[in-house]
Length: 446
Image 1 (cartoon, rainbow, N blue to C red):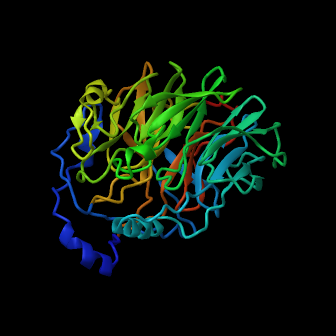
Image 2: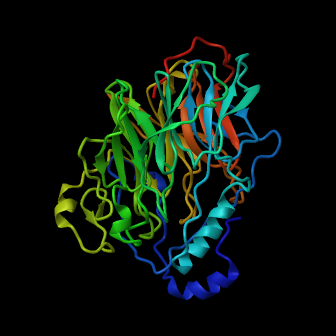
């Protein structure tokens, strides 16, 4: 069943909440031109969250026709993001964010809901290395590559340098192929915005095709500036960082919570997925996937989906609303996309070899629930070219509990799709049904 707010809190706060509009079919909001219903403002956002129950022995997510899913590894502590190394080893960031300060009664309820929707395991706060030396699709070796990290999330390897985006900094570590542990201390390349609140703590990371620049996603410090504009300095943005010096600039802004930063292999264009704002109704605002333009402004907090004004933000900025760029592709509202990767290699059927996979962590503020799956969007000439297709589902039970919640995605050296499942404590591996796991390694796409 769907969990609601505690009885006492509900009794106090329900009189403040107005009934909202009935939700529409979320599939109508998938694509480049989603319908946008009238906004509905709340004193208290309706909250519907799925309690995490984990996977029973023998259970796995469900692959679409022609796909099979098996566990690369289980028993992980809040696996959030993945990096496949050139030798085939898989790095897993086992991570969780800080506990934010409580400034309003709503935050008490939000904290309770978040605990219900996530694994009861304490996050590892480490980078774990998985090795499948015999190629059977199951990691028989597991070591801690880096321990005692500060909420690690984004990872990228450039030459012999491993970069980890912790919640407050990008740190560089020396790496040699085959290493199973790094004992040398890291060198901080650049500080990232964190601070007392640190609302969106995940910091995604990738590198430019030539390896000279890093790109870090820095989410907003609030839903819609309720903590004050001063708390949003250099946030809701993608940073471009010089890999050698740490010098940085804001590459793109107005992106409420950008994650899944990755480079489209054909055009070498930077793409990301974005969690949009809440508390405007069950079908506002659609989360999205978009290419990222240098110097582009994408609306947050002043507008959404181009020039649709958010009336809650004061002072208004009509000049920025007029300049706001339209995202490329809507994923529907409140699916919470946190992972994205472009397909590569021959480990999947032909239908899944030219497009993008997106991990949808799942909604907490609409009923029916939305997301809780991995979808595939076909691409042509570096652009989305079709409807998103469900490729991995089964994360929800029939009665609305969460066996797991997909987060980061990656393609392994054999062209199989890997899924980090934080609530389920697993990394899942998706291949063609009946396929052999051994294959010639495919090029690793950042």
